[in-house]
Amino acid sequence: MPILSDTIDKLIIAIVQSYDTDKVVEALSKAGHSSTKISTTGGFLREGNTTLLIGTEASYVDEILAILKQKTHSRTSYLNPMPSIIEPTMHLMLNPVEILVGGATVFIVDIDRFARY
Ligand code: 2BA
Image 1 (cartoon, rainbow, N blue to C red):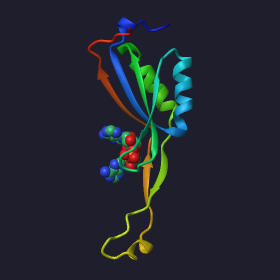
Image 2 (spheres, rainbow, N blue to C red):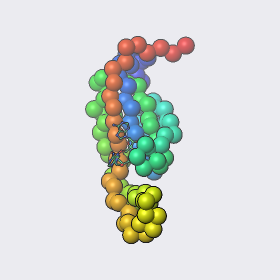
Image 3 (tube, protein in one colour):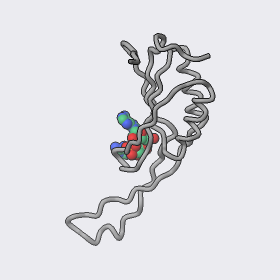
Image 4 (cartoon, rainbow, N blue to C red):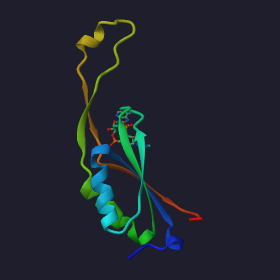
């Protein structure tokens, strides 16, 4: 059932890895949920990811979280440690650090008012 504008009282902000984005957006759309994609960059890895804005009503939040869980996956990424300024040759001895990234980092916030003009 389509969600009416005046019943939108929650905003889900979901940061997902770019490779999962299309699957998530498609599944949301199929289930009748609107979303907006923003291309973003993680502050730690400095790699591209996607932030989805999903306005919805409170009763749909769990359904949307289930879609996010189902359609995103954690993956291992590697971070090359910064070379030492003092010892410029040190970086040759440093191994990449393994980091687990994703599936979805989610913030759920209350909406005071929603309007579309
Ligand atoms: P990034 O900031 O690029 O972080 C990528 C991954 O690096 C994180 O995965 C985490 O495993 C690791 N990481 C981040 N900060 C770290 C630190 N200070 N020390 C050690 N490891 C660290 P996720 O936790 O899955 O986060 C994926 C992306 O979600 C992040 O990309 C960032 O764009 C966003 N994010 C995560 N937590 C956030 C928060 N509290 N506020 C805003 N955005 C957040």
